[in-house]
Length: 229
Image (cartoon, helix red, strand yellow):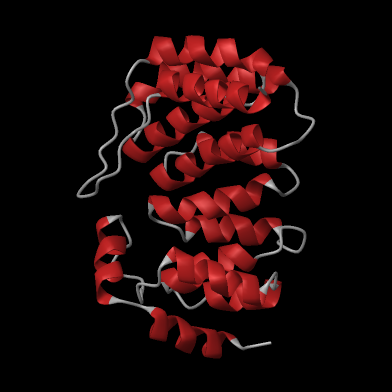
């Protein structure tokens, strides 16, 4: 099994200056290193390295974006401690890295409690991750009751337009995820989306756009209906 130093050498060789520029535009700060490795290449490395908690931990400590992205791909939720996931989130200060950390947290014990606590945090990235945990839970197969997700929709309705930029984006994504979870939640999420209207998110110097929750939910269910036929 390769060491973290060996993986770092491979990542550096795979990087490109153009991809570095892309990642910087998407919010990767200058205080962290970045080689500019594409996610396609990271995915190939993930397949080869498989799950490796020790290597994931070592890669995270490099403070390199590409290494941290790979670390979240090979991390083992069963071996990740509560202190680790909390520390990794506090160390994630741009929206792209909160996503894999939140997805990891959603697979760990106390995910519901952690989602609520993070979502209520004043820090934009921590609060964003809280709603991303909700999104991940809604999209996953689990035994959480519909009442859990339905109970979050009024909070989103009243808070989304006053939330910090990337928190608002995550809340919008959570509405979509709830709306596509099952038929029972579809109507309630659609009602919430209609109440919310357009979610305004500043995506900076990128081509990213905020999905319209109402149309996204409708299109998802339409595609599902076509597959059933």
